[in-house]
Amino acid sequence: MKAIVCEQFAPLEELQYKEMPAPKARKGQVVIDVAAAGVNYPDGLLVQGLYQMKPPCPFVPGTEISGVVSEVGEGVSNAKVGDRVVGITMLGGYAEKAALQANTIMPLPDSIPFEEAAGLITAHATAHHALKQRANLQPGETLVVTGAAGGTGLAAVQIGKAMGAKVIAVCSSAEKLAVAEANGADILINYSEQDLKTELKKVTGGQGVDVAYDVVGGDTFDALSRCMGWNGRLLVIGFASGRIPELPVNLTLVKGYAVLGVFWGTFTMKQPKDFVANMMELMQWYLQGKVKVVVDEQFSLQNAVGAIQKVMNRQVMGKVILTP
Image (cartoon, rainbow, N blue to C red):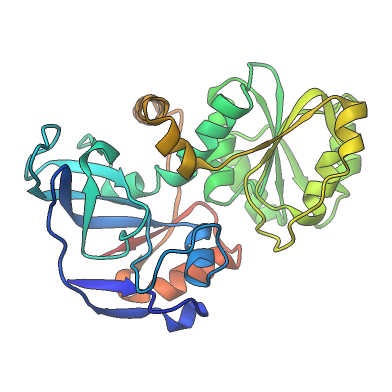
């Protein structure tokens, strides 16, 4: 089978598109013929050796896939050959075939296209976990989402609306803000033209933000840390700006807010029942039209480097998908 292989931690351009042995289903596993794979910001960090996890090389990146079960291992009772499924894997998604633990796959309704299903897992599931388990977002609260036109930011806008929040979208351009607005954002802030701290104080009537979903870090985090309301929750999702900020902890004391880390991958392992319940709710919301996957662009597997570069350069409005 063909796969994208990271031979050593290096710039993206050194990723190899090459022939690899096809995986076999071991006990408790299934093999999936991959129809689509989602591309995520951490994928680009991982292959450069810049992520929290550093797997031994060589390895195949990719964590979220959809496709058809082609082989079932011993002891598997929740899937059979020919089933349409969606699943998560720590590694191995950027390939024509992937072996997954059977407890990490879910049946995929015929009404959900493979390309959208592959984009539903990481971005939407991260946002869902962040807003539900970490922030306990309540109807009527204000939610500010940075990077609101990217994959996980756009998911947070949709899920925030589904949970009854008033959503403030923060983006770097009018074009990106238009996408956020089309997906439910109530208030739009262009931080390249407006001062984020000033605008947030203005739109919240000086009360501050209840929940902040920050994927950017850097100066954006600095502004958010000064705009949180009493009992607010500042969610740390990622650092797309490239700078990991430092928190003046005295602000959390005088403003009475919490800073909460969100690491969805660990959540799926430590709270598997909550993860499955979240995914079932997300699937239901998808079928009800409350959330959707906006596919920005599809790339062939062979052009995975270009796909990752687009995500890393923050040029995406929605999700980028690979199609083997």
